[in-house]
Length: 213
Image 1: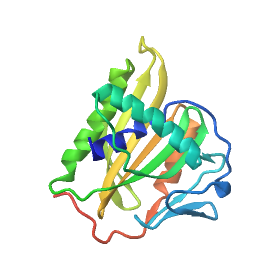
Image 2: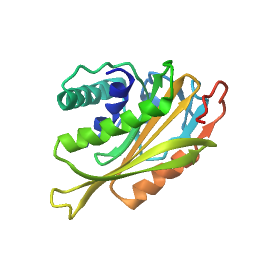
Image 3: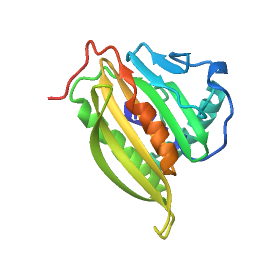
Image 4: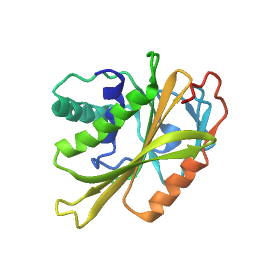
């Protein structure tokens, strides 16, 4: 498992684990920088305004979470997971409200949508294989002028009477890399705040972008 496996780890990055408290200006990023409260990434020409009250995860915290995600995927598919994605911006408001994003180089021949379908299938199957009750549906949404494929997942209590958390995952190929974003929330206020920040994202560079037919 190559590209699909590394991106699928994101689904586990958003499982409630611990609360983080590092202020955004004090954390070293793997890729990109924060300037006056705005995350800037040159690979995608992406600018994302960090909402107030959302804390930035550092490299050690991300590594710890990815290790748990790697184990979950390997147990689900009984195969080794390659860790080749690049963590970008990872935010957490509390244990149930989080934002993650990663970049993944993609230089394979063929239609990227085949990979995209497999990514979303792995995400769904990882939850189902661990006994989590979910509903899901697909959509397309435009962010900063670019259209993303989107997977919406709702997680329930075992009797399906209570919504535990909702998750929205966005994926798009831009140039020779994919941008994968995951948002998790359990209340309308935090949903509004993080999705407004995402909708205010800007993409200032799209040279070499591969367009779907």
